[in-house]
Length: 343
Image (cartoon, rainbow, N blue to C red; front, side, top):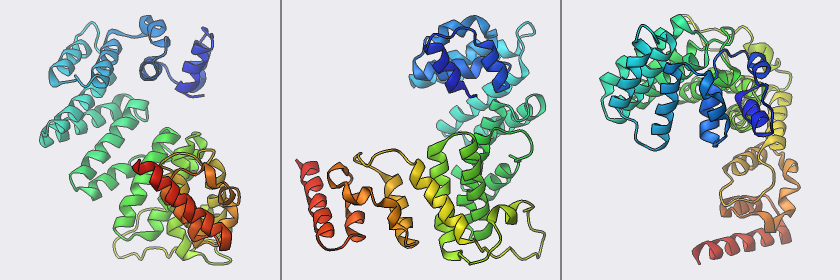
């Protein structure tokens, strides 16, 4: 169960929503109302009476953010409600400090952003650890450090999102895919593969297919150069993985063919359906990986769907792995797409 399903249930006529919230493990309707606001659902009005005064202020701020009108003054007004003895809400205060930190960052006030984002994460960790808002605060804090070239600090924050601490699977997936990129930039190949593999697994659990495809593709790209017949299953290699001690050598990355092919096959089967779309970076990435692994058989349907492809770069990739008359057809399709684009 996730908030999208609750909004969908409401839009389909369901009004007894309490059991759905309980099934999701949430005690507040704020997250559902926020999603409803973004989706333009009538559930927002339906839930208005179920929100506390402080939560209602957060929802008002979302409207301002969507309209591009959020500012420090509007957040300060909401903070007054969260701090008022009659309406005080410690978790919402943490959430609002996070919001203020983001606005400080947008305004170029780096130290103000650092103070608020740190304060917010600390408060939320103490009163609502592993909650939705705590998860978001951790991801925002990591993104902040990365944006100001403090990549090791960002990696440290991602490390605080433990897979055994009750954080949402989607949060773990987002965290690990970002950690994978940081490790890769530092040449930590095993850790990069480990994080990408974990991101793929947790994205699948949370039913976030696009994220699972993206992280799976990163894992395959890293592992493609380290395939070893008879290697231990990668899930078993990383089950007890932990940070290295000073002077300890990093593990050597060795991945069995079954793991690499299994992840690639899942990604191909679960990427966005069809081959149309003027920009299909998902298909471009996957077909490039399939070519490296000599698995272009996974794209047999694509390679005979010339007229459906609208992405010139994808058509060019198809031409590069085709032969004879098929390659000529794909080259002609590239020219046709470019001609249409320039008219």
